[in-house]
Length: 90
Image (cartoon, rainbow, N blue to C red):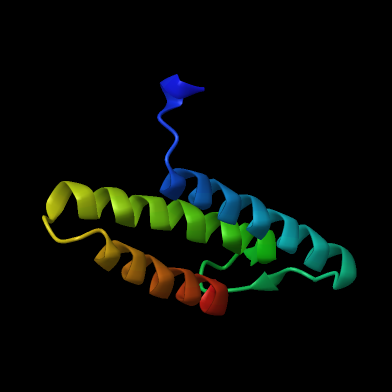
């Protein structure tokens, strides 16, 4: 798989995503959740909020790369606070 240019940061990223999905699956089995209504005025579950947080974080990172010349760590911090807000209020 040399053509994919795997690096340690890339591998760690995908391992963290896989671990998050496994943890959320275990949580869904052990602690079933009823959907709740948030600021979007639609019912969401943990998985829905995870998807919204990951998708939004991807857009934050893309915007950071395209608009700013600051280090990518700043986008990580913004994405973290965005994800916290999604899980809290969406």
